[in-house]
Image (cartoon, rainbow, N blue to C red; front, side, top):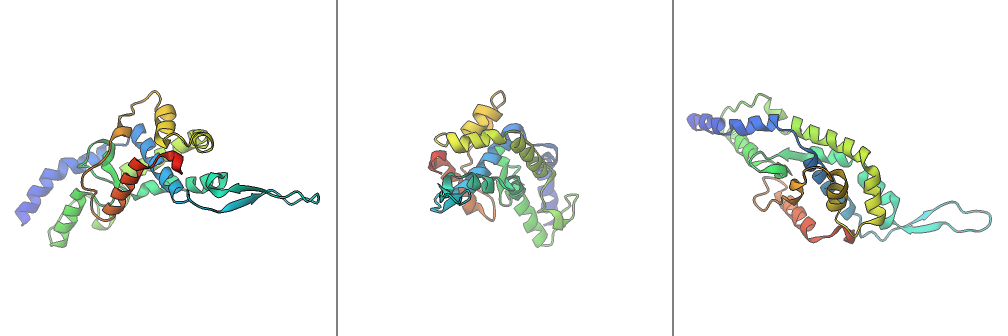
Amino acid sequence: MEMFAILFICMFSPVLANEEERLPNKCEVCKLLTVELQDALEKTGRSKEVLELGEVLDTGKRRRKIKYNTSETRLTEAMDNICERILQYKVHAERPGSLRYAKGTSQTMNTLKNLVGKGVKVELGIPFELWDEPSVEVADLKRQCETMLEEYEEIVESWYFHHQDERLDGFFCAAHVLRDSDQECLNEVWKGDMGVEGSKEESEGESGRQTHDAGEL
């Protein structure tokens, strides 16, 4: 078993090294930002709540009523801490391109944890209790997400109020943020195993993003 563990770790050491060396590009950041924002909006998209705006004046003028699912309040709540959600992602180094970022434990890490559970000593250069902490790569994803959202907040608002008939990733990423940059990652779709823990949820979410247009929000 010990010999197998050494062989296994040697086989995967280039993969683990790449996790440290590779940083996310602009396309990957934009893609995940729109995935998380659209997911947050979908959770409130069918609300029947009606908001009353403005003060009641002595003249008897009534407050203006507006549907919550088309209100600025809904957008503000969806965008609140949206980049914090990026920290839920893990690096799945066995997957290509932008698909390396997904929620749930990667196949590589799950196998290493199983070895530890069987009593095999596995050295990754960090304590075992920190294995599930956000990696440098994921932390950089969050940082770039915050910068991008601050720089292009008006574009998000423009899509929300005037262009929901278009896909969010197409309008925000392809037409604006990545207009003069590589957009290849926007077309990458994972169709295989989703990893361990939460894989069903991720798979269903991916399916939902393929079948629901942003205009349905």
